[in-house]
Amino acid sequence: MTGLFCAIISAIAFAANDTALRRGILYASVYQSIIVTVPIGVPLFLIAIVAFRCWSSFSLLNLNSLLLFSSAGIIHFVFGRYFGYKTIESIGATQAGPIVQLGLLISLFTAFFILGEVITFLHIIGIALLLMGPLFILFGKQNDKYTKSGIKLNYNKGLMWGMMCAFCYGISPLLIKLALHSGDFKFTIIGGFVAYLSAMIFLIFIVLLSRVSLKEVVSINVDGIKWFTITGILGSSAQLLRFIALGFLPISIVEPIHRSSIVFRVLFGYLINRKHEIINLRVLSGIALSLVGVYLLILQLDLS
Image 1: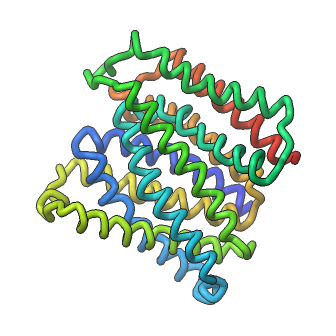
Image 2 (image 1 turned 60 degrees about the vertical axis):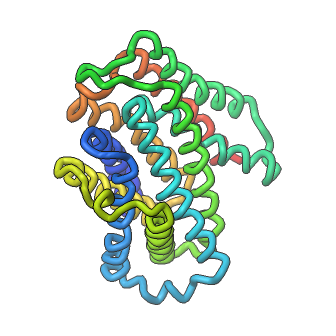
């Protein structure tokens, strides 16, 4: 019951995170959003370590798991998050969903071509539906060029950033899965802490090497800071709950629940950002096709 509750709340928090981010980048840059949101995960996971008394699980870390958790953190929380936020900046959180969902194809590629699993007819249907979702989004290039608030959307850049994000989001779960040699949920929290800490350290190096002035880093609009802080807390909390859920439930249960966050994106987008999002029959159809494709593919992963 604990795992199921965490998985559901995690999906809702992920959707709220993207909705808050959409509002934040109206006031500040995506680069600044990464600087604010990534470090928030470190103290949050540290609090979880204290609350759940996970200290003894640090002993389960070996060099292999440490490298895998660290790599997953940098790929997901720095590169993947940056690409994902750029996708949202380009076409909005609602339309970004079906494109980012393509990350599941990376997992399938690994299963088919590296692990030697068999491709079934339902796999083909699922992949086709998953690919049709972004196509429905791209159909809006002609008619939905602007939001009601006057924001110009860039579908070509949205597709480019979304594909890059999907690649990162598809690779990172594989690395985490390889690192989780222990099924203890406390060890998954340790893994999340290592991932966030590595991402934060890597981000500091990027800032230092890029020679960006401290003034430019901290000179963020007040409204931007507010929404990015909300984004960071929601995103980190969602990741924490997802890690805990994976400690209690198999990925074949957690993943379908996690993927349902795309539905909550529409709900939150309508309630909070309706003037800054494109929400119509075309977008809803693309989301529906993508979601059905995802569930067909995950069903096959569960059956194989």
